[in-house]
Image 1: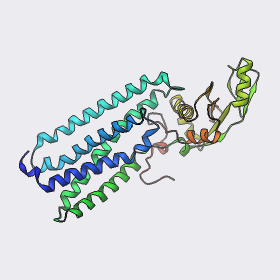
Image 2: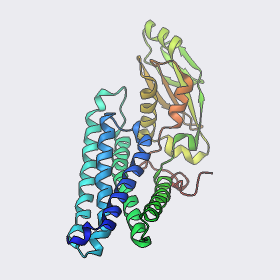
Image 3: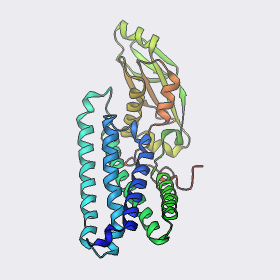
Image 4: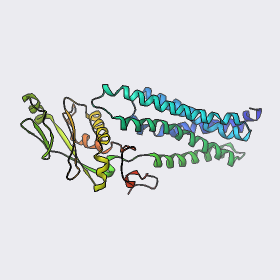
Length: 303
């Protein structure tokens, strides 16, 4: 690159855009925290990859203006690296399956890995648009350029966040407390058969005393397509067990007539309200077959 890239204008452009892109990524870390392991090390991984992605987005504008097209080719290399990160994250989560209370399931892991990759593009786009704004405004007063970039970054972050943010179980279903009953060796929740493995006296006493349950009611009949999917139910069960822990048993069962889904367990923390909240916040998986109404993004807001 020639000396023009070392000018004050380009230094401010690259530095400001990189910081804005990284901060945009940090602003959505809270959404990812419950999905990604290794906190606080997970935060460090996200921040470092966000910084790299933001830097790539920031230098794209100066590289194009100085006709340094070789530098632009690094964008394609970065995309390949982000895809490799996605594969690594998938493999990491699959290796952790045996250590959890219950499996996430392949469908949930695939969604997490895709989100991990997409957030890098999130930072890159915000940084690129901020850099483009500084270049287009290009006022002598540096503060105006920086403020313009910040405003653009905030707007782009808001749009991308609304567009990419998936829906949750609470958007398509009502979740209510279920009544746990043990009849002989069989477990029922709201008169719905769940399991028959409570054969021992200790198991029956434990479930009668400490067992809790929640019942998921689809708001519309076609939402059953999503809730009946095994991968989706496994993801819901995983979020429930992660929130409360599991002392012994955990079950998921679907009821065929009305499409109700049962989540029941003997938790470490006895809190039915927390169970209901965890289920409501469980994400809807992208690769589960569902209607266009479920697939709609939140760009224009929810109904």
